[in-house]
Length: 480
Image 1 (spheres, one colour):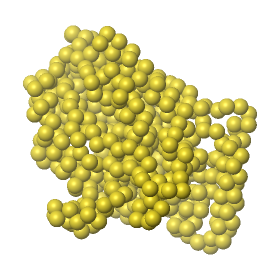
Image 2 (image 1 turned 135 degrees about the vertical axis):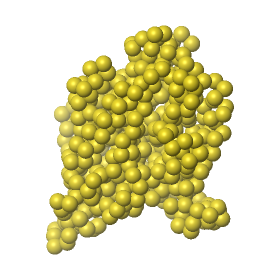
Image 3 (image 1 turned 60 degrees about the vertical axis):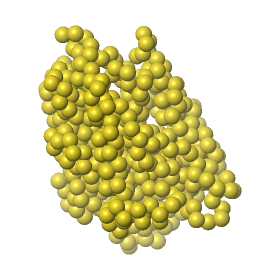
């Protein structure tokens, strides 16, 4: 078969936990009280016609992707899919805060205290999750057939910068804007929506990647299992374009973004009510986002249908780079020591409290969080320490898709897109363990998402990713 022909396969699985879980995304323990809507994993398998190139892209309704789950998947796939290189599989999370805890190598937090037998442990969910991912990947790979692709982009206001800067030079994530000290929102916003559409041999639409620079966190503080706005988005798009349509969700660079504005909230809330979405802002915003993304799909689909391609250039580079861990200063060390001491004292005061109570669990997690900074300081005394990071860069026709494991601030994504030789570039964040990767200006403002406890890698590492992925795109587009 012609090397430029493309083989395409899709599959999906339900990854909703079968028991209660501890939900990931806040400092306090939240045990799921119900399932609001299902969590899913979706796999897209791609192979060149001559079998020389391949990729499997997987999306999860999750806060991040644990190294443990990836390792379990790759080990199983090596046994069960001998024709597929598991190293060519990349898995990304949509960053919902209403999905189960999973193990993070960057922030190795233990299971929250006080969980009963009725609550799934982190290891139990990782085992369950990896099995479901493997099922989807194996089915998608088995389903691959000659097909076609097209791509396009639209615009929708989904994400807003959530880092609030003040005249005194400080920045606070989700800070108050209705006070005299408010100066500006710290960083950029990106309202582009990237689409990659797949078709069968008869040019019937089979699925799409939708890449949005915003985490799925409209109802992030709820105590129910939920895919957040991606649930309504999938339902709305399938209602318009077919219930069998596969939708692979990607979060673009959006570490400093949120799906709600920091200014004009009351005016926006009124408009959501007038649209008939209800008076509760956060659930209404989920449906609003779904309708906006469905409108982008409605606009783009007939346009990209004019340029469906059965033959495309296809390349996939996997780069492993060692990023220097952010340097812990003496001031950082002293601050973390004081936080550990304060949290330890608080835990003693709360010794008779329920371990999973809000006050106890916050003190417990903050103590662990700050102890990690102390441990990192002790390690750096032995010499510079590095974090190996896996980056995927894929060329498919005129587009490039670039993945990284971080909550990557928008500016970094802009830098890659601006220098990319591809006509259209998809940035895929949280393709691995999470953690914020702030920009230089975020470091100056400080605050959560920029201080040392929440950022194992600093701006130098963020720019190293930019340079590596621009280099890999250059390699893939060498003859263009």
